Length: 164
Image (tube, rainbow, N blue to C red; front, side, top):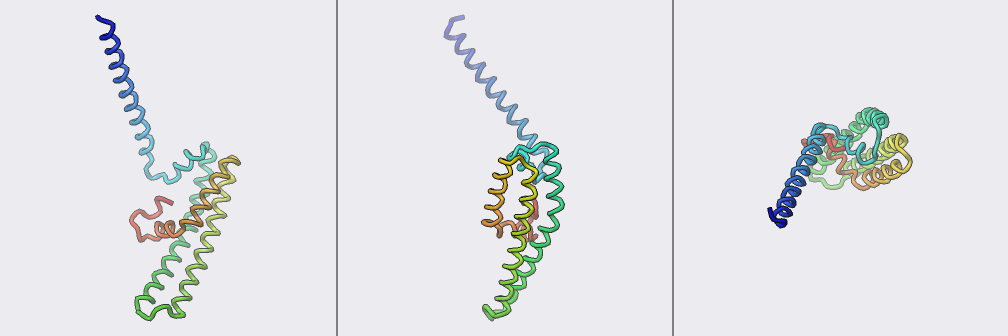
């Protein structure tokens, strides 16, 4: 066989091996990722490199906090519906509507404070550098995107609490 043909054959075989290997690795990673589709904390373990013991403690804290979070979101949703009913009456921003807005703000502030305390508790499970990164991100999300969190918890959306 001529040398150029051997080189070409070697390149083709190497390419086939590379494609097959990539496919197998991607398949394995995808199957591992989708084997726990309901695990809304898996990202935390991967992102912050938590061990099994740390993750078990984080799950315990998360499970304990969920009813607290749900309660705040339910309260906010009820007040928002009540406000909407007042506004739908067509009387505008009455004293009663303004009082509802103030109540929503009060509950939101309590909820955000509660979330920040929860995140601080979770961060104490992590190594210091990971804890710092985690708290920084959770504070940004909590204070910047709280409305999205409320909406996901309120039951108004089909996906419920899965992304919180």
